[in-house]
Picture 1: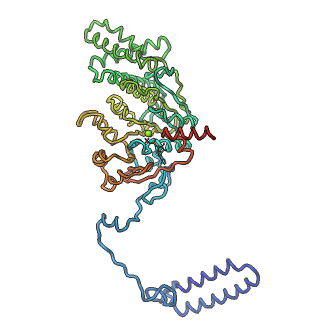
Picture 2: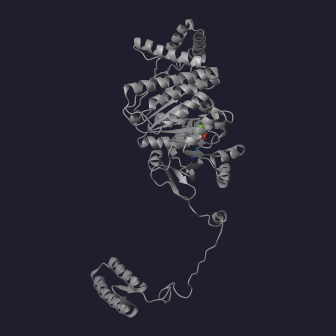
Length: 505
Ligand SMILES: Nc1ncnc2c1ncn2[C@@H]1O[C@H](COP(=O)(O)OP(=O)(O)O)[C@@H](O)[C@H]1O
Ligand SMILES: [Mg+2]
């Protein structure tokens, strides 16, 4: 058989390379000769059993010079070993791959080639079941660059991007480069967002059924109450009493009616007016609670928060824009309370705008999200809205420094700690960039990392992260193009040198 095959190969070689006539004639003669030889060999070496010739050479094939067959037959035997030793003895074992179905993120450093990621496709394939991702890493390890490269590539592939709250204003350049719109909020910025805006009305509810007028009214009311309660909780730093909850709810309904009479959208001052009016309520409990709530909400219209959330929205949210962001960098140096209020309002406003399945698939980024999760009210709002992400085609990305950021949310056993845990559990994609030695133990325990993954985290280079999703983990180097690198650069010193170089040129 071996001989047969090699003769046939010879015929093909002649066919291809011998082009001229003489050669062709010679080739035909030699082909005839080869066929003759073949027949002779076959007659000599095979016994036909039905239609199938069977080889008569022994194991190892025909023994002839250079045939690589012969007496030196290779004998293999198994070596029993542990998985640990096996991994060391056979280091060139590549892990699984997610396939090429998605956007190129970078290289899988464990031999899997290109690492591609598309959460919507992975969800369809059943690899992940939740539509959110948490990105952990020390400062300067490349977390934001990963989120930005993913976002830029996603927008180019037809998806949309919303940055819920951009504390350093580092997404502004990226969003503008994508042709998107940036809303800048801060003291004396002249832009107002009304946290009580009804938001975008989806045509379908979370169950995928047509949204009725009553359903929509209920959705808007729930959203408005959630943000009012969030604001009061941030401003008072405590839970609301039942009486306070009651008066706030009544005041909101009264405020909505008053606004409807004026044919405007309800704003926080409408709610404050209703609370002020309720100060004279015959029930002392209601009167007292109204007084406290009115005083608390006054904070939204005075001091460092004045002019930001106390009137009708002046910014325009373009649902069709490829990218939108709320730049809150003007707030750097403001009181922590003000920062929390701004995060809550901009987060809630963005969520109200994007919670619709009609706008296509959208990526929502919570950049440097520890402020969001250190406020219980904001954390709760986030947990709830994340649960709806799947129904509305949203993929959330929360960027944090370390796992203990989530623990900062509250004491062990508290409701807040439980909510932070639920946020971590809901994030089906976890990406961990380099971690400090002091945070390694907690990271390992909380994320259930293996010994190898734990030791890897200490030494990850810039732009390299450990991706954990669908029960597998990948070590991925995020590849950035030259244009992306320049666009994402957050190193101020480098920015200046580039600018200086340009000025000199
Ligand atoms: N994948 C990468 N390849 C090359 N350089 C990178 C990469 N990721 C980040 N950098 C560089 O590191 C700097 C800081 O990255 P950044 O994403 O802002 O870090 P973080 O958000 O974790 O603080 C960037 O300005 C960029 O120059
Ligand atoms: Mg960053």
